[in-house]
Length: 272
Image (cartoon, rainbow, N blue to C red; front, side):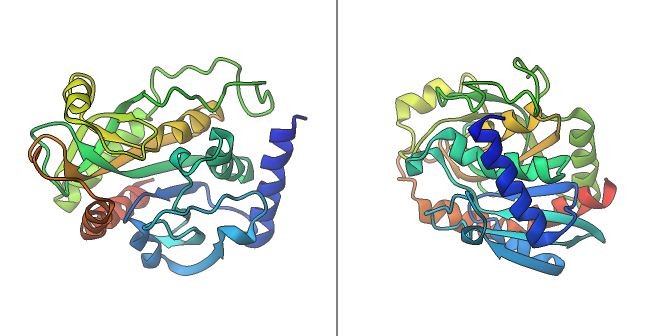
C-alpha cells in the first residue's frame, strides 16, 4: 500500500470513528454556501482540525466542518468548505478529504462552487448545472503511482458528471420553480481573478470559471462514484467588465443564493 493510500485510509477510519456508518450522499459546499449544512436535521458536526490529515481551509466562507444529518428525510454528509490549491498545498492534500470520504462509504457526490459567469445569458445569482468541465489548472490529482485499490490507471472522463443525476437535477429545478442554467465549467488555480484578455479567451470554451471542483471530480470518477456539479454564478465577468471582482462580493452572493441552492439540493436528495 502506498503512503498516500495509507493516509487516505487513516483519515477514512477517523471519519468512521467520529460518525459511524457514513451516508452514501455527500454535498461539498462551496464559497458562501455553508448555510446549507445548517438546514440539516439531527445534525452532528466535527471540525476538520479534529480529523487526522484533514486540511483546514484558510478562506473566508469555508467553515471547515463535516456535518452528518438528514436532508429531505435522508441521511447525507456535508463537507462544509474545502482546501484550495491557491492556499499553497499539493493537489493530493486538497483532494485527500474527498478520497477519504469515498473510501469511508460515499457513493454519490454533489459538488458545488462559486463561479464567475462567462455566458452573457447568465445573471448573478443563477445556478448552473455543470454538464462538463475543462481542467485549466495544469495539475491532475492522479499523477504519480496509481492507487490500484481505488481505481484504474487511466479512468475514462468522457462523462465526468452523471447523466441520470443531471436529469434528476433538471426535474428538481422544475418542481421547485428554479431557473437552472447549464454549461461547461473551467477551473484555474487562482487566486487572482481573470484579466479581460483571459475572459475573452475563456468565453470560447466555457460558461463559468472557478478555482475548485475539477480535481475533486477527477478523484471521484476515478473511485467509481456518481458525480453532480452545481455552480452558483456569484459574479459576471462579461456584464460588468469595468467593475472589480472581490471575494466579499462572491461570498455574499453565495449566501443570498443559498436558499435556492438549498431548495434544489433538498429536492435532488428527495428524488434519489
